[in-house]
Image (cartoon, rainbow, N blue to C red; front, top):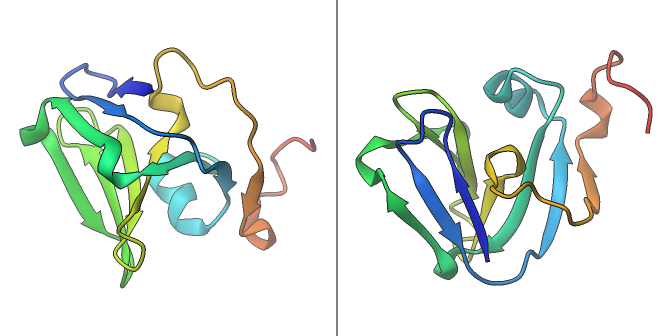
Length: 121
C-alpha cells in the first residue's frame, strides 16, 4: 500500500494494489504543472485509490481531452493524473508519497521534450 499527502497536509490518500510502473514524464504539461523538468508518477489500480482526508480540497483540471490532473486547492500540490480513456488506472505523484517511493522508475515519457538542463542519468 502507498500513502501520500499534499504540502499543507489537508489531503491524505492511500493507494492499494501493486504499482504497475513508475515513470518520469517530460511532456510540457507535466513540466508546467510541476514547475520542474518532469512529473514523476506511480500507476496504481484506480479501484484501490481513496482520499482519506480532504476530498473537498481536491480539484481536477482537464489538461487535455482525456487527461485529468488532481491537486490540492489550498497548497497546489499535484496529487494525481488520470486518463478518462483508461479508467482502471490512476497515477499518484511520487513526490507526495510517505514514506518516499523506493521502487524502480521503469519509464521515461516524452523524452523529446526533456529539458537540456536536467542532469544526465
